[in-house]
Amino acid sequence: MSIERLSRGRIVAAAIDLIEREGADAVSMRRIAAELGVGVMSLYNHVPNKDALLNGVAEAVLSRIGFTDDPDAHWTDRVRAQARAFRQIAHHHPRSTMLVVSRQLHSAAGLLPVERALATLRGAGFDGADAVRMLRMFIAYIVGSLLREVGVTPAFAPEQTRTITADGVDPALFPEVSSLAELLAECDHEAEFEFGLELLIKAIEAHAGRREGTR
Image (cartoon, rainbow, N blue to C red):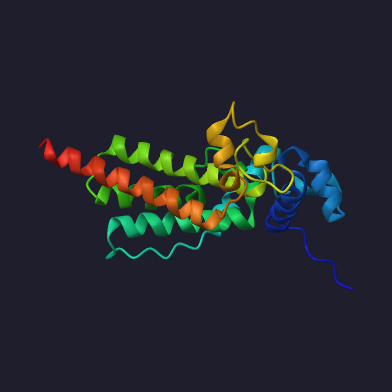
């Protein structure tokens, strides 16, 4: 039986698998070596250290984003497509995506999604400062949606193990929570994401209109 040759790609793939199972804190060079059944020192022929390995994980995840950008489409449709593409890869690698947004990447894989997003916003007429702010806003929104969906959640994000019911709330003290308990206990993640995405796009459209009105 042939043994698959050790490579940087195999090491990064093993790290992604481990992160998705146990989180980024579980990653160490020794643990990855054990996952691959190799000596720990052999990893250093391909990855110099843990930090480089985590950068490799982030780059690998970003490189899998399936952008289908149409330069002839309206900028709002391009923003929608980019946001949905990032969310889709985040669904496949939710824990690794948290790593992506926590690291500063200067490689082509890390910079390409940022370049595309900024180019779209700049092409829509926004200045550099606004484009950067909007990019950060969309990333924050997508990550917040992901946190709710994959189970690292705030109090009002429904989980199977955490459900607000009218029976558990005193309507005299919390009339709104009591009356809306049924809605708070349910969540269509797809619909919630699209609702928020449209609000963000309408907000930046309005911002663009205000800027043009002052010229």
